[in-house]
Amino acid sequence: MPGKIHAILCTGNLNHSNVKEYLKSLCSTFYLVKGEYDNIGLTNSYQLTPFSDHLESLRIKKIQMDVDIFVHGNAPLTIHESEDAISPGSVTGCNTTVPSFALLEIQKARPVVLYEYRLVGGELDVKKNELKLSLK
Image (cartoon, rainbow, N blue to C red):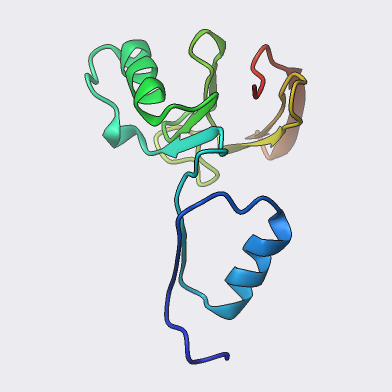
């Protein structure tokens, strides 16, 4: 089938990571949307309004997306535990002089562990944080 499929549109609820990997192997253009059992939301900061009240806009978007954990684009790396929101920063250092990214370790009914990676003065700084966030 390689070369015959030009795009895959998946409507969510994959239930296992192997299904996602298989679908991605069929075609380089792969779109996946949130399903009813998916609990993590992802957006860019330009979709957050009102921009003048950042924490309120995070809260509103998280409610609209109906997610437990909300990851949004906005440098620098920031954790908003009161809003269950994380900004992973920018690996390119866009809008800041410190390139950064975050890895999340997520297991149901357990606290989320966030690994913060920052490049400071040419040295990689890694911090591990156990957050109050968790999936329901």
